[in-house]
Image 1 (tube, rainbow, N blue to C red):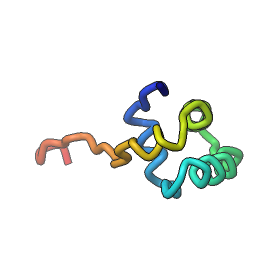
Image 2: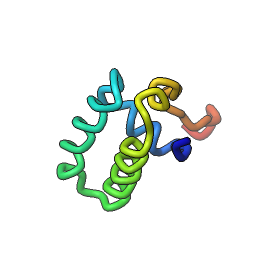
Image 3: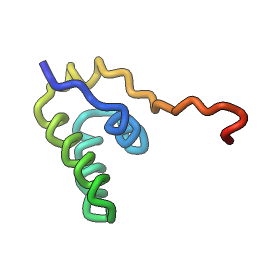
Length: 76
């Protein structure tokens, strides 16, 4: 079984092609050199490691929806 994805990892995944595990790996791998923030690079590398260690069936079973923080109307 694969390691669970963090909220940050799921949010990053959701901006790329999630039609297949291979498509996501290809797009994310191509994007990593463009990232400037070390934290984003680390998250992307973690995602790539997890994707490479899961099966296509595991990937298909994922529910990939971005998570949004709840904000009070007063804070916005």
